[in-house]
Structure formats: structure tokens, C-alpha cells
Length: 158
Image (cartoon, rainbow, N blue to C red):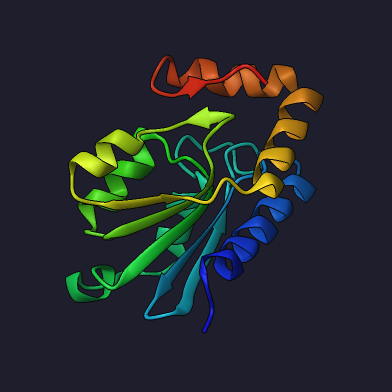
């Protein structure tokens, strides 16, 4: 049986795709009943988008699911989801989010938990190192992205 680390490795591959495209290395995978139904990666820079975070990309790529389908899903994301992505999880009643790491950037995990979402953090070093390397090599691009969202996420000192 596939476990959380199997699916997280797929999300990491999505994050690497974003990096290859010149974007922020964050990836996500949406899984239903133990099978991948969609993948996504951060496309903010590549698409000059305001909303194409990895989690939003994965939800969009799944197409229009019904309530029952969403309620059987798990969202895997390499980084702690922001308030927008957490809102989508709650809106679509996705019951569980598995996060690769949350030490470089803390999203809206409390909001997820307060709304009944099961949140699991794997503390995956691959996720941390990929994101940390990007921020160190692209400080201006990352600072510009953070400036767009104000204080809605907590960026920890890298």
C-alpha cells in the first residue's frame, strides 16, 4: 500500500517541475482512495498569476468533483498551505492535508485544524532543502512574493 511518503515524493517532483520552469518550488498532489487524481505546482511566476499556488493548481487540475469525491481526498503539499489554499481545502471539504514541511514557512494550519481538517506534518528534509535553496538563491523574487500577501504567512528565518 502506498504511504504518505510515496505521495509526498510525487509532490516533490511537482515542486521540482516548478523550479525547472523558473518558479517557486512548491508542489501538491490530490489523492482519492489511495490513487492520484491530480498534481499541481506553483505557477505564480510562470503564469504571472495571483492564485496558482501548487494546492490551487492541483485542485483545479482535478476538475469539478462532487462533495463525496472531495470528502475522500487527501491533499499532499510540500509546504504549509497559505490562507487561500487552506480556504479551498475547507470549501471543498477535503478532510486531510499532509504537509512536507512547515519550518521555513508556516501557513494557515491552525485554520485548517479549527475547521476539522486532519493536518499531518512529515518534516521532510527534501521539501525544506528545496525551498530553502530557492529562497537563498532568489531572495528578491521571494521577497516580492511575500510582499504581495503581507503578513498572512509567517516566513521563518532561513
